[in-house]
Length: 212
Image (cartoon, rainbow, N blue to C red; front, top):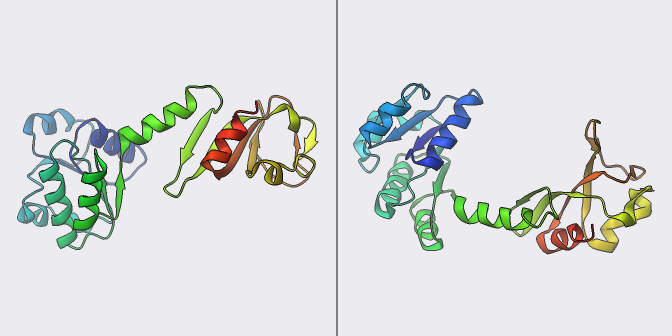
């Protein structure tokens, strides 16, 4: 994995990948920043990623994935994505700070654009009300959430609850206190205090969480 741009987001990505056992080449043009991270990132180098020759010299295409986390300098971000695309990188992720930035990144070669601040803001907005315990939304308006089981489902099987027909959501599983994860079956019984892992369209998930 190549991570280019070692601000807070890029550094967090690189650290998490290293901790998970992945080989990571981390790149930034700030020499002081590179030196400060040398003790925790095994392969961190100073380089200008807008320079195609520099990326070629670093053999970035030896890696399957690249994350361009240059968010504040639009020109540098776009040029870096373009360089990676020209080198034939098969999976390029680009951090963007605005929809315009994201559209440009996609046009020059990014395979996936991420908006960390916007995504986290939306996630927090769903969680801060206390109606959901965790929430992940996908690009097509589909979401997975962890929420408390509503009273109408207590001491009933999932078939008896009929939550899919009544609320348009699917129960994927149940997490019960001090027990292993329970994969949802038709005859799985919901108990008071259970946490349900549910999937479905975001508006349906939001409405269902509000039942508690």
